[in-house]
Length: 319
Image (cartoon, rainbow, N blue to C red; front, side, top):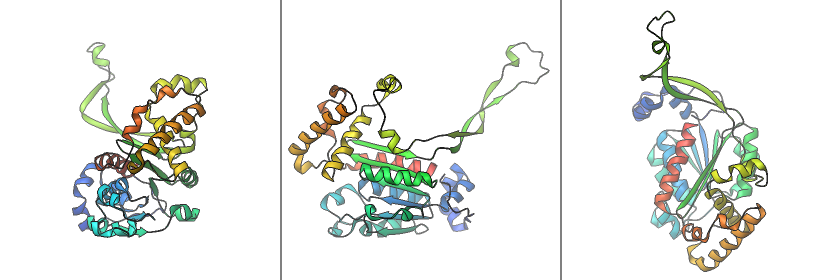
C-alpha cells in the first residue's frame, strides 16, 4: 500500500468499513487505513487515465486530483467513459469530475485544468503518489527524478493501439511483505529417520516474509548502454516492446502528439524512420523491430486501456 507522506492514522468509519468490506477482508484493515490516508495525482484523463481513476476511486484513496489541460474531443468520448458525449470542447479533467466523484462519494476528487508542464516542483510534493499517463519522455523523467528525491512513488503508463506499457519507481529502498507457505521444522529429538528430520511445507498455512528491493529511475531504465557486455548478455531476454517504447516516446517528443489514424500514411513513414534512428543510436540492428509494429500502435483502444489501467491501478494501490 502507498506510504503516507504525512504520518497520520486515518480512522475507518462504520460506513467506510461497510463500503470497503470485501477489500478489507482481502488486504486487512491496516492496509485500508493507509490507503484511506493517501493522496494521488493522476495526470492525463484519456482512456487509460479514466480506467486508473476508476480503480483508485473504488479502492478508496483519500483524495485523487485529475490533471489535464486537453479538451474533450470525439476521440475522447470513444476512448473513455467519464466524459459525457455532450461535453465536447470542455476541459477533459473538469468534464470527467462528476462521473468520477459519483463512483465513490467518500473519496475527494478534484479537477485541475492546468498544464502539467507548467506546474512548479512544489505542486508534486503534496501527493503520496504520482501517476503520469500520456506524457512526454522529458516530463516523465523530470517528475520521476523530483519525486525520487522526496520519497514519492511514481507510476507511468500509456496505450498506443494494441500496445501498452507501465513503469513504476518505488524508491531505492522499498520495503514490502510477501506471503509464502509456512515451513514446518521437525522436532529436534525426532528419531524417525533422515526423511522425518527434513523441513516440510505446510500448504494450509502461510507466513508473511519482510523483504526489501530497489527500483531504478525512469532515466536509468531508458538510458541503458547496449554496447556494454552486461546489456548484450541480457538483450535476448529483453522484450522487443522495450525498444518500441523508445520509438513511441521519440515520436511524441518530435511531433508533440501520439500517432494519429487520420494521418496514417505520414505517421507510418515517420515511425519507420524513427525506428531506424533509435536503434542506430542504441547501436542495435534495425531488424530487432520489424515493420509490423506500425499497424498496431495507432489510437487509444478501450479494451487495451482497461487491461493496462487495471494493472497500473493495482500497482498504485498495492505499493
